[in-house]
Image 1 (tube, rainbow, N blue to C red):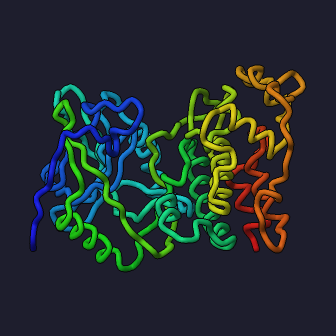
Image 2 (cartoon, rainbow, N blue to C red):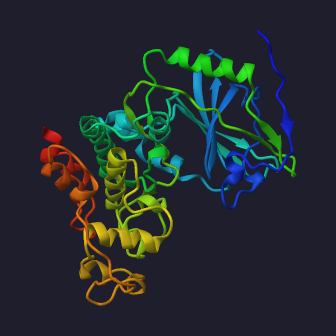
Image 3 (cartoon, rainbow, N blue to C red):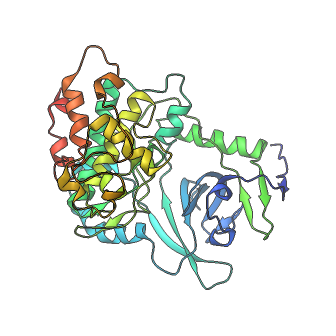
Length: 377
């Protein structure tokens, strides 16, 4: 087969992890396509990247395809490993269906960083397909049919119920972290990706510090398959209450923005935002600033209860003592006016509102939502 040599450049164009705010090349393990990691995993293509890792398609010694996630360097054990160790016995014995809706690694190992003072935790997974975000972007019709959304909601909530039952908060739910399983022709899809990488290698460059960065290759998949919740790298363990920053801004719960204590219900809030995004292809509360997010919450959900504001240290920056927005009038609108569905589905809107309650004490749990009438139709 014709092999086209991989071109490497030091040009200033930023790609993949370089585009992340605070990027530091020495935190990432240097990998190129063709490398072998830990004598076991031959790198075939780059699948993705994030603030805390890069993800690669590889083959093991048996020539089986695997996904290898290589975490950024650190001295402390990463959160994902702690969660897996916390749940290892439960995964072996639990009959909860939700455990099958979360991605778990087949193997975990460490490799030393270049300075040999830190290490990179590596996770080996069965390959999955594109994220829901990538899948939506690749479709002509960006939104999903109501029946598909209902079906996905059951998967999502089972995954959350399993995690929450065992005192794990995912804390970073978003479309990027929900991946689709590969269809029955998975080998053909993966071989096609590897062949494409051989014939037309992904752009690669060397940073000024001598660190390689490879551009990710998209995995094309037209079949809609089962959604799997991934990436426990931001997960929080233990009994609530918790505090501090969590979640990406578009999916951030109000109690996190307002610096109150929080619990597993922040995942339920994120799921409510995701369900809407699947139906309207927009983030209901925007993605620009926390102030805009709160304004949008007031617009669509009315004013927050004073009981919540009294528990949050930043509440007085945005709301007066009666719960009114401090920075001008906000016209309230109904969710029904934002989502055009025929015929009207009052149970659907009740389901969404049950996830998007201002006060986490009033927000439904994943277990309760699984029993909601809209999911029983």
